[in-house]
Length: 164
Image (tube, rainbow, N blue to C red; front, side):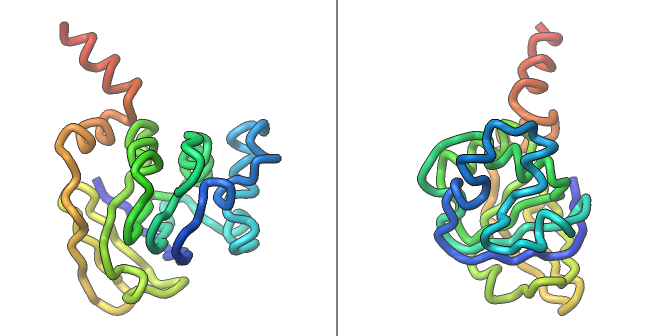
């Protein structure tokens, strides 16, 4: 599994309420995608393209465990999320909905908005095509990789039940 696209860089300590404001959570996912991270970068929801890479710092997705935040990010078409460190519940929610997320300490120091980033999700290899630098993300549990490959928890469960 690979993702390649423009880097959208965000900072540290971004709570789910900054990813999707609470007054937007009753919208459809298609509508919600028009507002993702709007207060941190108003250009992001208007200009993000399918396959682009969201890069952020430490504690991304902290506070509320609302699964709507990763769903809204996925609805933007982002190909992968690469962070220094994700809040545990946000991390797991990403895999459960089939949104690739890698943790890669030091990544924010080595990318800039607009860089072209290539992410090999299976190997955890991140390459900044603009600078030529490569980074190794933390390994992902094989079960979570299998969940991603299936498209999320529900498709994985269906796949497993078909094999029974």
